[in-house]
Image (tube, rainbow, N blue to C red; front, side, top):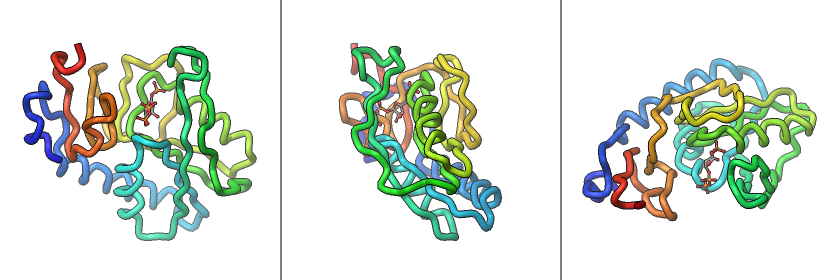
Amino acid sequence: MHASDVADDLVEVLFTEEQIQARVAEMATEIERDYEGKDLVIVGVLRGAVMIMADLARSLTKHVEMDWMAVSSYGSGTKSSGVVRILKDLDADITGRHVLIVDEIIDTGLTLSWLTSNLGSRGPASVEIATLLRKPEALQMPIEARYVGWDIPNEFVVGYGLDYRERYRNMRDIGTLAPSVYS
Ligand code: PRP
């Protein structure tokens, strides 16, 4: 689906499919350079990261292991509680290996902050984060992301994995959702 297919639901298109593909390819080039000769496992955070994982992994020209985690950010009621529950754990043993967590957005930072420390406790060689989007104004935790596609304003964005009530994930572009859709 393209943004033009749901134009009435969007205030604006923030990033087109072409811009996203170009930025993800740049991030892949950087990642490849930084992990040259290293054993790398990329970990996608279900479900939103499916698109960026697929595009990032295919942009790499070296072998990489792809693994997945599913977490619930609503462990004790609200997202802001910071409590995260593992719904699906890694299949891979990451002991002594380089781990790159891949997600499509850092919003409050609670999910990835928790995940970084959880994976960090398993004895990996390193744990870093790659995210396509980050909302600096929404951050509630200091969190270091080594690879960031773009910083964006604190607005409701959808597309390229990002949903509103499970819709828009399959939109190729990223857009700002019109308040009329969610109010
Ligand atoms: C989104 C996104 C991140 C998290 C970021 O996932 O994929 O994992 O929220 O938010 P935070 O920085 O405030 O913790 P979500 O919980 O919406 O699940 P989904 O990927 O299945 O859509």
